[in-house]
Image (cartoon, rainbow, N blue to C red; front, side, top):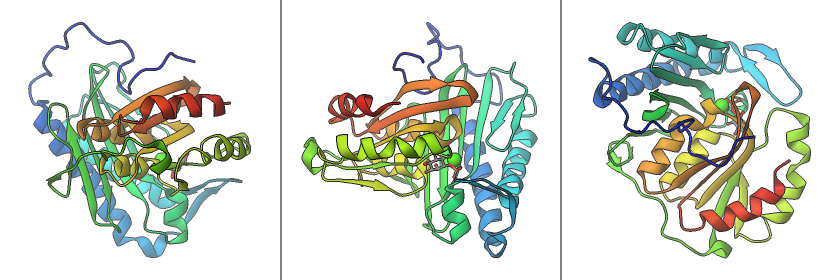
Length: 280
Ligand code: IPD
Ligand code: CA
């Protein structure tokens, strides 16, 4: 397990080189937005097919639309940046030698989508030289489109957003999530005991990317989950940081798995001290 660090800071380069031609931060953000919009609209147009299952697991479902939405996002990125690396939840991993890496979660909150709950989104992030450069999270049924790029404030539907100013742990609303594996589920009783008793309420909403955006928007004070993946968290982490909050990887493991804490910053260290005890 790695020491605590921010997403995208595997090894912090002394001085990042400027991105190559055609990959300025604005062009990266434009592409992330276009890819998220195209994939989100595809899912929205096909909600009648929400139960077309590709594979069914004990605590998860893979939909035909997960794959289709990933293909749509992939196509948008490939057309603009054919040489960039792309990593996607649905078994997509190409051009890893590139200094740019796109990270796609085609439908985050797939189980919600499958059941008809509107809390799901498309999440697209891009890293330049290992550091997050731009991110977009689009929740079509909620009509919420979060964006951020390095050096600029985070936006929701084009308007600046900011994390909550609440520094009182006992008045904090915090969300968490239940992972895909049985052992993730069994550790939740402990988390509800250790964290639930110290904050106002603990919530499970079912989309890690939107959980992190809710922190960025000041609706919640924190989000913690052990057993999510880089594609769940990459875009949201940049969005919450550009909204004045913090996103910290508390542990990472094989297959791009992470334990992530995102917060408004004010209660970060106190939350971390509590959730660390709940890590498996
Ligand atoms: C899942 C969601 C969920 C979280 C799981 C994720 P998916 O992503 O973000 O909220 O608890 O750990 O795997 O499978 O819907 O893309
Ligand atoms: Ca996901």
